[in-house]
Length: 364
Image (cartoon, rainbow, N blue to C red; front, side, top):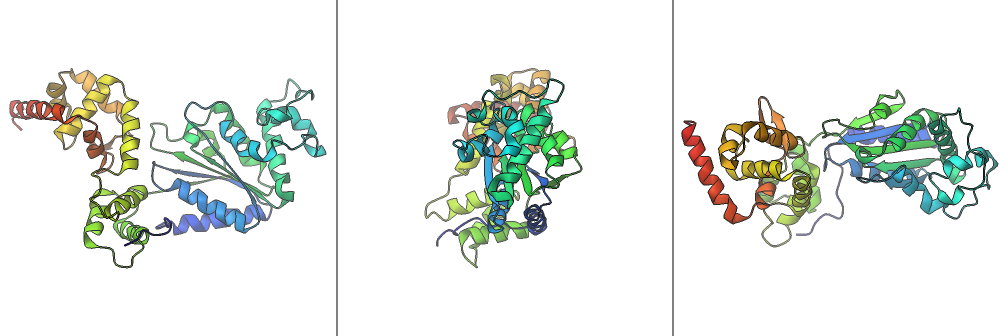
């Protein structure tokens, strides 16, 4: 059995149709701003890839950039532009000359002896207007798609420019499409961008069971999904597309699949590393104990006071743990297994013994 040639969009028909309308509008001179929101692995990049494919088919130029954690000012915007315009003479287009100094923040080769903007003019307005005009002129005015991923890590200066662009590109052949995770305590640092009436926000949800099976079938490249694989993805993926794909790939490689898909394991390892040692200790103990994390049990298991345990569980939200009524549960069915895999086996048995003693003391 062979894997499918490429991942397929499943359960995103409405979102795909909306993207098609936005691309067609931009190609016809009615630009806009698209923000794709959702948790890690939900399919944001796949939807943006589909947006780019539609734009190229419509004859539009596609530019891409990505924000990174700890990146400097304007990182995603500069990344999108600099490869294309590194060698372009800054004075080639007369319309851009008044914005040369401002655009030099994104394209250092354009920074020169040009006059700076007047001191009373908001520099965000000057840079935003210059960028809007630049994007509209690229590709001979036939349309431009600017794709910016991971904007949950974007700096405040980039977000301010994007807020301006949302309104500035309305009558231009420019579509700006960004992605951001909305699983943080503050769903997206670009809140003002989302609040703009010109911004179209798309929030991707997890797949239902039928969507999970269909995606697994397409990923496997077979009309008849083996029953063990079907049960695996339904039991373990929690409707998250990237977990469906990882589980199918592992199950069909011809060897026993790893207990935790490697991509998820890496993601969980990074999230554990972001916790301070005390908080990580509590989260790892919760994985060893199993079930819903219970502060009354985790205190005796870790030897930490209730205040510290509660603070640790808060630190694990929402990347590892999520609310479930008055309690907490693991974010995905495999999240607990991934955390448990990070705990050395010799440390697990003592923790389980302490947990059993705590449960007896509590009469549970």
